[in-house]
Amino acid sequence: MVAAGQGLSTDEVQSIREALAAGRKPKVVFTSSAGQIAGQVGQVVELTDPSVSDEFVVVRFGRDELPFSPADVAVAPRGAGRRVVEVKAEPEPEPVPPVAEPEFVLDTPRVPVARREEPKVEQQVEAKPARRPVKAVKAKGPAGLTVTLAYADGEWTVAAQQGAKSLAKPYVVKPAEALRMVVLVDVPGVQEAVEQILAAERAEAEQQAGRLRAELAEIEARLAELREAG
Image (spheres, rainbow, N blue to C red):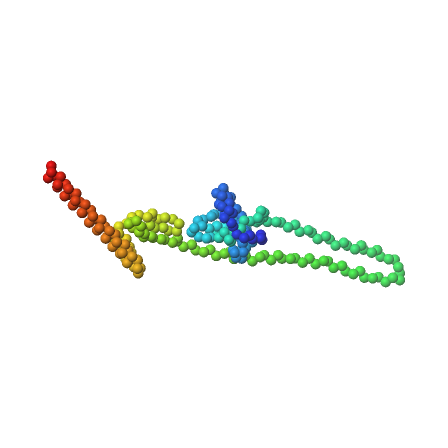
């Protein structure tokens, strides 16, 4: 197991993005925020759009490719993930005591030779660590959709955006169409505000039309005088 770091910094995320563009798959180690797989080593295979989800670092762990946040992984130290083969030394054989030669003494009773017991070799079975559960993958839903009806400088505009992608740039709509959209929403106070804006525009347009008619009448009278003089 490798010691886990404190997560990826912005510069490390950029370095991983450049390494992926060059065809490499950088190694990372899971931090404590990744859960029970902390300390394990994986390979980054893809960086998705961070504006869509916080878990945009796709890591290959075993046979799975799962998304994680930058806080769940850290840059793995060099040599991480390599298997080290341990060479166990063979036990030295126990020395065999020399066999004593028999004594040719008539009065000395024969002492029975004690039976030497063979050393028992106990076979140790190395217990395999239990497989740690993999962090559950969160299902990603569709990005949010935003439709905006705006009024500025005497014009009504409509725009649509899904997540970070712009579906429709602001385009001009008629005041009547804007009022119909607001009626469909049926939000208290919004329809009254739109009606007040339309009433103000209507009054201004009527005043402008009155001024233009008055100017046109003066021009017509001036033209009639010039015709009579000619």
